[in-house]
Amino acid sequence: MKLNDAQMFVNPIYRLIEITPIPVIVSSPSGKLEYANPALKQLLGYEGDEVYADDVVITHADDRELNKAIRTKLNQFPEQPLQIEKRYMHKLGHAIYCQLNIVAEMDTDGNVVRYISQIIDLTTVNKEAAADILLTYLVDKSNDAIFVANPQFGQILNCNQFAYRCLGYEKEELLKLTIPDINPDYDTKAKWQERVARIKAQETTIFESCLKQKDGQVFPTEVSVCHIDHQGKSYLLAIVRDISARKNKEQALIELANLDPLTQLPNRRYLEQLLNDVFSENGDVAEGMGFIYIDLDDFKQINDQHGHALGDEVLVWVAKQLKAAVRSTDYVIRMGGDEFLVTISGVTNTTILNRLAHKIADQFSAPFSCKGKSIEVTASIGVTAHFLGDGVYAANQLIEEADAAMYQAKKQPGTTIIHFS
Image 1 (cartoon, helix red, strand yellow):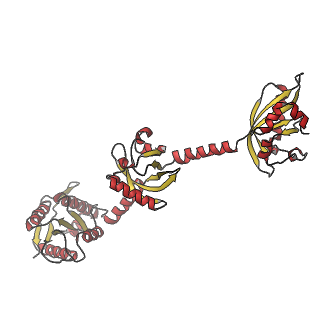
Image 2 (cartoon, rainbow, N blue to C red):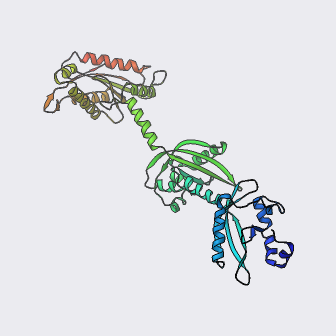
Image 3 (spheres, rainbow, N blue to C red):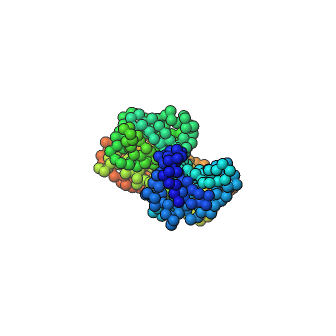
């Protein structure tokens, strides 16, 4: 039975409770609801006096035993208020999670005459806590670096834990820097402004870039960035992922496709790409090119006498000898079997070609030694070149010329050099 208006009027505390925005309940020692203020009715979805109906139970069914335990404790220790979390039921049937603060009201003889409860809705509190958890674990604990930056200057305004740790900084250090400080792609103001303009033009931009660590090391990244207007100010929000592992895998696949597995020299496929880069569509080159074709003499006999395993060792040795003879700008290609090709850039006269050809020939002056065996290895060497002003040549034509000169060299005993004429 609810408190009547006379009871409400006599006690000014109840008049104050009537207008407070905090939900309040007054109940009898048996647990019967005597009074609910407007804030409580609004929380649970009731109007007027319908909350006092006999068939209305505002406590969640699973927490009703908890109510009994609360009353028992208050009866035993009426001077001690209680605070506990429990669930109430909304009129529409869903649970509302609340914090219950409850005290016992006693008469002059010390007997409990009613309970006064203050209800705090934890829905908002729990949502805020959940938001904090999401922020902490999805952002700060993310395995991607996350930055908030000023678009005008690239000043780093905030970042997550992974961002400053992967770069080797403390957070306070990193927040003193700009994006251009940690990204060598933006070494000029113009480059940074150009990137920001592209970002603004799209909702979200994804591109590959890089980051520079505190110790100067640079690693590749994939960047997803968007331009945000918030409370009248502009920001850049970037999620940056380290793609070093992916790039290493891609590089390994490229090497697998373009390197000879035995000698680790570039193969014919790599040669095609190289020649496409060097020779224009009309068959001209920006600088002279030379080709030296090398074929080992009687290599089949080496395989037959000493076995293919040792033959492979000879090929690896030859590859090392050839690389040692040429310049860092030249390429040694394994054409297949016991045939090799050296491409020479920047050839302006035959002197350079002669010098390199003889340096290559000198690599075969000493025998190959392995596991107590000494094997004399000789080679036939064919040389050709394309000098500026020689007219239009196809790359394959030049290689064929070097190959033809090599076959002429095979007619001579020992390591021999023949220039295509």
